[in-house]
Image (cartoon, helix red, strand yellow):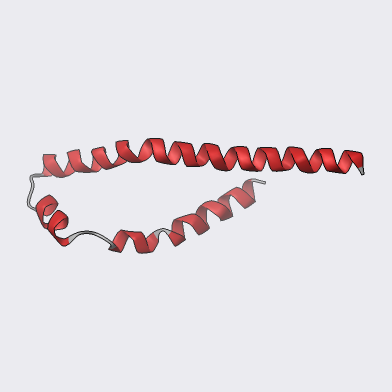
Length: 79
């Protein structure tokens, strides 16, 4: 099970790689022109904004796997 989870995480990470190239040129130049403290604040802000999304997606994936496993167990007991 842990191997499947690791493989799934790796596939999702590799599929998200093209998204890194979709930066707005104006946003990039504005962020590059700020000080180191400003860049650090931007990075922290992005991480803070991503936390709820990643948490909800993880919860959704966990519940899907949990209930599918539970359903499969119940079906195998009734067969």
